[in-house]
Image 1 (cartoon, rainbow, N blue to C red):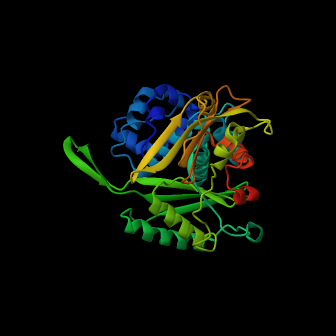
Image 2 (spheres, rainbow, N blue to C red):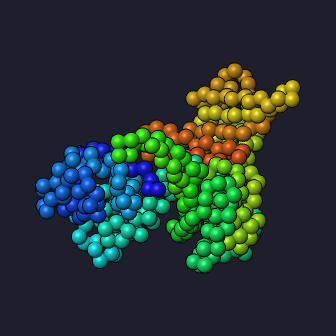
Image 3 (cartoon, rainbow, N blue to C red):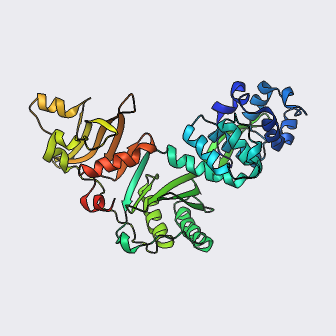
Length: 388
């Protein structure tokens, strides 16, 4: 089953006109037969393209073959205006023999189409990198080995095949089907692992040949895992506990050599908030940071045998507590939100961390800086901070 198309891109004729016309016509040739079924014959000349008609065709994929759907999905995902993504596509293609044909005024969509037409498999790599840079929330798990004695090596194709078989057993047990696919790539000091697998079956009402029917299918999804070689941290996107455990055990076994390679201990330490108060937010030793304020704390405590959540939230929580001559309430701190004002940014950026090892950052490019600040202030556990 193909993925959902990016309707925001294909539904707007104005967006399609931003693509270099000759390149766009070559791309549409992949769906020439489908266009004919919609009573539209592609022209011989790019200046004769009917963008309004093409837009209506591409946003009505009934009867479209899966290969063309996949091409539309990938191009639509990468057509967004993103400078980091644009630079990455330029870097990947600069040595390609077909790269000189890409116009000097190329857009993200132009690059995505050019890559797909010349080297479709390369676009999978671009898509994985885009997923890496755009993901906001991760769960962290730390390696429980001496990193000085551990040397990471990319796994062989045979090892990846064995990993996929092991993952399929777990997915099948949870009624997600088999046919998983694992891709792994090293980007600087990070090892990026993407896992494609199925979700639980879905049934939807549909119209086929003018009659009401239903479509029964298994949706496809991708999970992202990133191993940081310097710190030994593995961060991943899935939130389900069973899926986290499956990845920790099987990826630990087949890629890192042991199912117990990663532990489940907490990465974060919230004690500096109580021990140092507002001083725990100091940032003078970071030239990029203007100031940091505490926005929110979520505290869990027991009351009469029941769990009681105490949530304190303010624009500057420490200032509010000080003015009321109060401190952070007793109990187990489960979640904290900081607003970090960078000197080159007009507005503060939110950083959220939790006792469940979850860290949320809106822009992944800020993550390394924020992690260094967390470690310097003692919010990352000491043994982990020593490794980073």
